[in-house]
Length: 292
Image: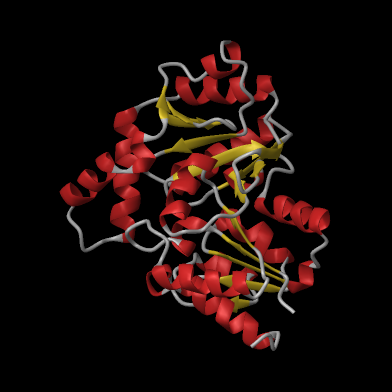
């Protein structure tokens, strides 16, 4: 019996237009009526994820920021795993001094050091998902997107700690040259700060959180707290920040558009996010568990 469905968002639940694919929403309504709960596990924060889920009529708990925080159905914070203040401050100082574009996430919002760079990053993501669109069209979509207009912009991200007294749950570093630059940076940071976890959700970013703040840790905690057997849950994702939750599930699916290394970890492969791969993964798992 399938007990729980867990899905990533970008490149997984969301289609090329960064909306929940209608077939995915329809399947999730079907399984909800069958008594199978659903949660999202995403690198996004609550406000970013909720806007897209609301649009599709989906209301569920949200594991956010790659596992650093869990929001209940109504947005209440059930737990969070924050970076130590000094660690977060030193990473921000280092990234700023070396000229990287940075974003910092707390339980309240996403904070960016540059709106221009945020638009460029979103333009690149949209173009990657829609290669048939021109750069100008992608930039226009990015400029008008919720992901650009719903976050806050700060000249100094250190103010989040020193003045606002917020806990930093995740720091994202972005670079146009992608993992060629970011992989060495990740190794450097891990050597300098022993209590951090690094991953990537797409080619041009590096995501830094505290050890124990992974999607896998969060899914396991959620299952332990609610009595779900990991062998009877379905997880589905497309990128390296999904690996920890794919490794532990009895029914793990890599998207057809997933990175090759992610496909190596998952037990099964489904269709792409363009073609409602999540809905197809659920249908396949239901057959395997003889639920239908």
